Length: 304
Image (cartoon, rainbow, N blue to C red; front, side, top):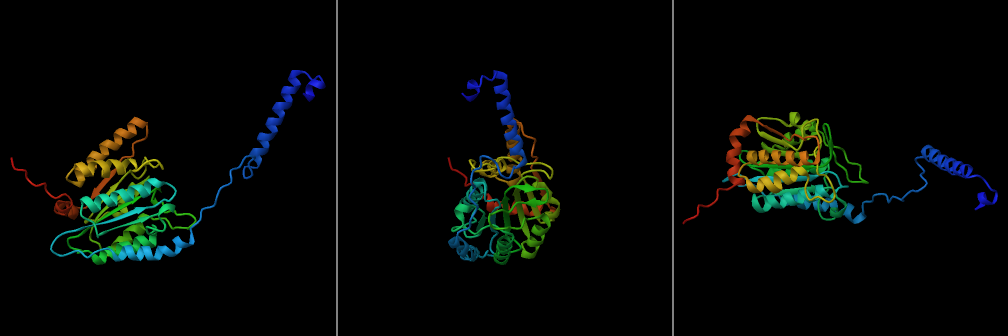
């Protein structure tokens, strides 16, 4: 309106508009920490009742781990959900623990450690401290000659790093060396370790020994997929636990099926192959079939 009253030509009006936009863009780029349109972010909090509940929750979970009788082998399950900002890790650990308790007989011999704002007054948080205490307790309760640990860890990751995050807490990340030393200190002899995170194959060299089976969702230099708030499982978690472990009668055949399933999903989405890994020690090769008899009991013969 003002430019029309002054009878400015159209090209002068266009130049003024462009100059104004250019000035705004340059200014915005120079003060990226103070954007023109900024959504107020609420800083993460950790409520007082949750803070004081954590000690009680962890002690209760530790005390609930039952002793393994010498008459037979038992599986012990520990699930760890590392990152609090995506619900898929919590959902996955909760579902897999329930699967192990109801189908694989770990009820009374299982624990989960979860980083998620929704479970802070219900479930012990995951940290290096709580993992160490859980492994130590299980090692004390297990028959070390015949019982076996199934450790499942799910989160984001980097090479040689499993993410532990529960803002505003400042948690220390889990690395392969620490995890191996903590497992050794627990006295747990037979171990099945499954790690679902990007670059989780980088944990294999440090965790390898004659009595251990290690499964990872990806190779040491590859990402894994399916980490969204909308999902109940990651790609590998769904393929291995929710599908293959329900359909197969051995961990190895379940892993082979999961490998193929994940590959098909990744190809369909155009993702770079994650290349899940399998590494088993020579003693575990001999022991696993015996341990699996407890995990996958033979089906009763049907009479005609």
